[in-house]
Length: 85
Image 1: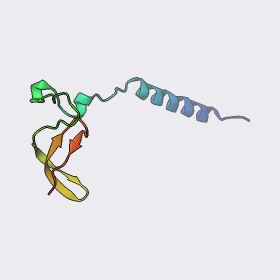
Image 2: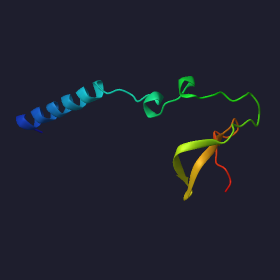
Image 3: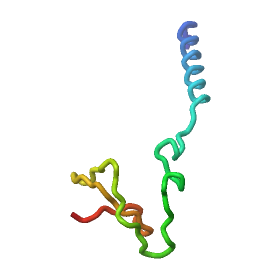
Image 4: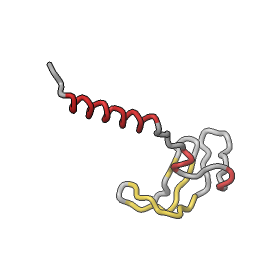
């Protein structure tokens, strides 16, 4: 099987471009997705089986199962809980 010279050059160029893009890519960190930590007024929950935070008011409401929620709870047992309404 014979491959034309231009096809071979195009394939090598394409491979070089893809390799270059992969080599210069970076992973996204958690800090890039959202801010967190003590400097953003985050607090740690106490150690225990069923400890949860007080109700946290959200700046931007979230939609969950076709209902808009403006607050949530953070707990040890379940990472996020929504208030019953």
